[in-house]
Length: 118
Image (tube, rainbow, N blue to C red):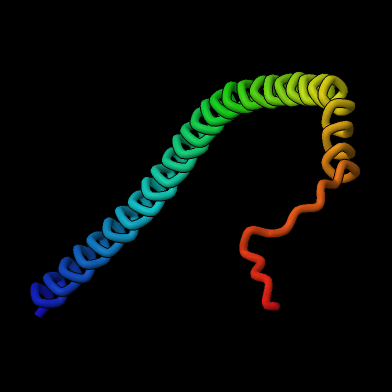
């Protein structure tokens, strides 16, 4: 009987040691998962900062060229306005004279489709 109780005691002790080892393995696994998660977050943050830096660099290049284009467009617009003003001033008097002559110099004529009915 003592050998049976001694065997049962050994089994209980072995079961307790196995349970302790399982708990310790779970704790190590939890720590390792937490550590892996922290490492992944650090890598993600580093990658995000690198991509953000590249994005800002490309954006500054593009926006810089866009502001140059806006300046060129503004300059071309001013040149075109000046050219149109010169053309207006040069041709204004001649156009007014031509309009006045067309309105004031009336030559009465009978229309070609007019038919006398008498």
